[in-house]
Length: 315
Image 1 (cartoon, rainbow, N blue to C red):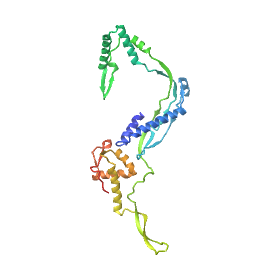
Image 2 (cartoon, one colour):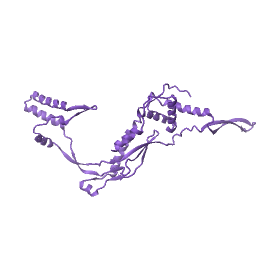
Image 3 (cartoon, rainbow, N blue to C red):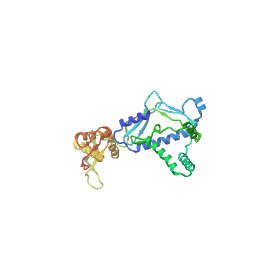
Image 4 (cartoon, helix red, strand yellow):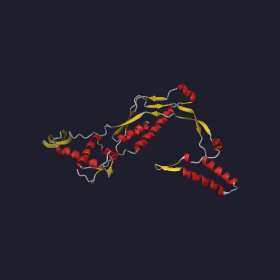
């Protein structure tokens, strides 16, 4: 059930394409962490011991795991149903009965070889038997949703099925093994903007620019002279030229991040290289779409694509 919830969360919250490495990397990390935790804390019990214990190996109530994707977004995992544990890990089994893999290819080869020898090396008899088997398999084969499968119920019944079933069962080999318990999870995912110290969002209400002002410098053996030094001051946006310059730089970065027909995810990944927070460039992108500087394919959500007719941007 949780996987259905997480799938719905991803579809609703992660617009466009997201980095390919996220799923692979997080899955690999999860496998390693699970195996390591079991190595250090795992307990394997037989049925009687499990009945006496009558409780899971671990039960986690509320949880709040945050995973910074590195692309301006953070995954936040929390209980889907707050009245139930987030994760329940049962004890392992030390008495699991496992059936060994049966060598079906060898069995078929041996049976056909026996038939051939009983027929005094008559290949025609073996060929007829195989033609009949392949015919019934073809009849029972169907293709659905680009997947091919053999429908067992479409195969004809075998004569003396009870006796034949006994022969087949006699070839089974079982052994006792250990296995970990199947964990139960109760999770949902929320995607939030990441606040990092890597880059500071541009503030168009307060632009930092250098101001030139003269000062008097005394040099030894020489008369005082006037020199010019830089004094960095903050000015308010009444100087429209500086605000416009900063805005045009941002627009240039946005256009440079759009290659062909780009999804919002592709743009987000590219804008990370410029060190500009999404809270700054996303509103500017929307404004550029409204003004016609950036076009779209007219679709919504994940199907939406952003387009720039020309890559030549002059600042």
